[in-house]
Image 1 (spheres, rainbow, N blue to C red):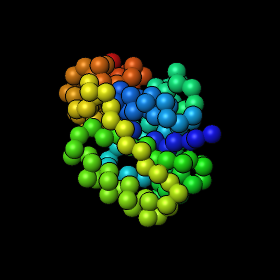
Image 2: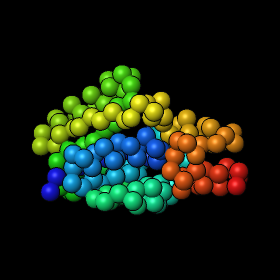
Image 3: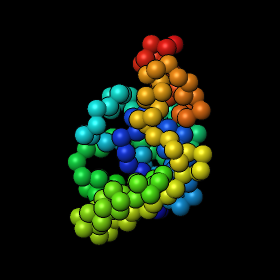
Image 4: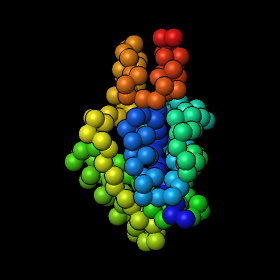
Length: 160
């Protein structure tokens, strides 16, 4: 069984994340969506909320498990038996940071590969920060996130 690990903050999970997750399932038999507990970013949703939203968004996909993690990602990959870390690249600006992280992860554990996937063209501009900003001002984010996330954002910002 080839297990991939798709890690991130997922605050919140977007359609771009879901696109990368779907693409990864054509390469890996199973994928763990690993949601980072500790993050340098201030998160809108708690860890438990981010896990629940990702679980609901991925419910229709076979071979997906959502799990929180803390510590080094390569250690979590080793613990789970993952053979690769999946990273999405939207633009050239993502590449430098992701390349550096992939090299560091390889240095820490040479057995774990990093696989870069590009989202569908329609999602190349999309990130969680933009989604949060649109939602916070009352904008409609339903085209950018799974329905469960759109509802959670409306509730969070009192736009029910």
